[in-house]
Amino acid sequence: MKLDDRTELLKDFESRRPRLQAILHLTGGNPRLILSLYRIFAEAEIVEVERSFLALLDDLTPYFQDRMNELAPQQRKIVDAISLMDGPSTPTELAGAARLNVNAVTTQLRRLEKEGYVKSHKERGKKATLYDISERLFRLWRQVSVEAGRRRLRVIVKFLESWFTPQELLRYSALTLSAMEHALSAEKYEMVKALTEKLYYYQEAMPLPEIRASLHFTRIYGLEKSGDKASSDQEVQQLFAEANSKGDQALLARAWWGKAFVHHEREDIHGEIDALSQYLTFNPDDAKAHYNYALLLVDQDRVKEAEEHLQQALRINPHLSAVWGALGSLYMQMGKFALALKKIERVYQLAQEQENKELVEAAAILAFFTRLMLSFKNAQRHNLKQAANHLTKGLAYLPDMPSDSAQKPLGQYLNAVLQFRQPALLEQALDQIEAAGSADLSEFVKPYRAALRYHQTKDKAILNRLFPEIREIVEEMVRQLEAS
Image 1 (tube, rainbow, N blue to C red):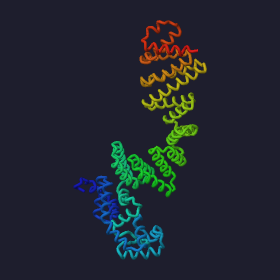
Image 2 (cartoon, one colour; image 1 turned 180 degrees about the vertical axis):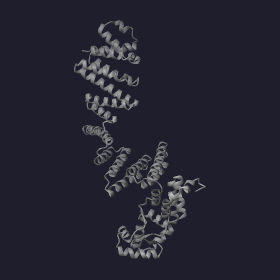
Image 3 (tube, rainbow, N blue to C red; image 1 turned 135 degrees about the vertical axis):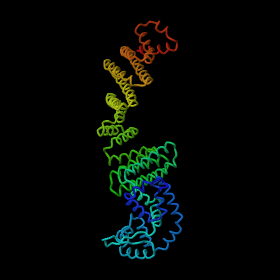
Image 4 (tube, rainbow, N blue to C red; image 1 turned 30 degrees about the vertical axis):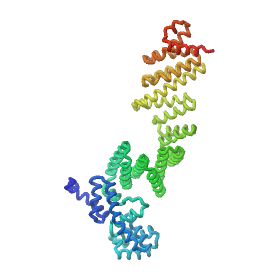
């Protein structure tokens, strides 16, 4: 340890003694295992340690297989049961795990002990005898062989639980998550897979259920993003299995969220809708889930249901600007412009409070467009006062909008006014646009102003002073304004 510059271990030796004793127990005193576990502490090289362990176990497989083949079927069941237990166990506990009669298990345990497969000891002050596998490497080999081909080492999980505090596990998890995000950005997918495997051990050792579930989902995310669909499916199923075995509804909600994510990545909208619907039955107070679910419903033209879920999201959290915006867009799609405006202006207000410049710009553009729509709708009803009022309020958003974002909606609005033959409203609109003080917009509306002046005066000099290509546009505007 001095050679590794880890002198702090020696200084804190007494305080670390319980942890060191736990490692000694985990490894059975095997020097090779102890050194491997030290690498996890010293270098956080979990995946490399796992590989070296598995390589060692693969080398020993022929020898261990021969030993297993020497056992009777009942004895094999007992050896498998001991291997999968978390520690030394009583005959009664092993009988339950192996689904055998206690007396038969006790008899076989004595034979296994005599043949060197298991060892026994009694706890001080207790009558029951505890049994464990004699050789630590044999125990690890059997765990890896029995556990559904996962080839993961419980000894690493146990080491992490013994050596690191929850805060330390959180810190190492955060570092691994950061590395995974960088690997995803760089499209280094093999590295992503290795990091998700590393996260598995932190996840299994994590005593905090919420963090543990979050790490599990992150691993699903990494595997799916890296293209390992089979592994991400397996992780989702394991999350369901764990939730169902524990009767844990919060964990079951997480499993449905993971399944929804997988469907989303695979562009399976129906599967995603079904999974999110299930998630919301277990977690109905998740505002963002209601929002995501509503967006999917809109794509399926289930507009009324989408509206209900957006409203529910706002009842849960009225400060989510994205939800206000989505509801505003939905009402515009439904032709309910007045309702849309209320929601959009709420987004604008929240964006200003949050000092979110990008969101302020987006909300201003949407509010500007909605005001123009309402202005024209009122003009169609010959309510010119309200039409002018909406236009005035719409133009008030110009300072918060990118300079090139107003011309297209204004052009559409002015063309509609021309076609509706409303010269009075057109004049009010042009006066207000020019008064807004933007040189670009004043230049943009010059053809409309020329068309209006010609309509009012019939002075051909107005047309004669225009460039030919501009005159052609203005004459078309005049025809629209004067069409019977």
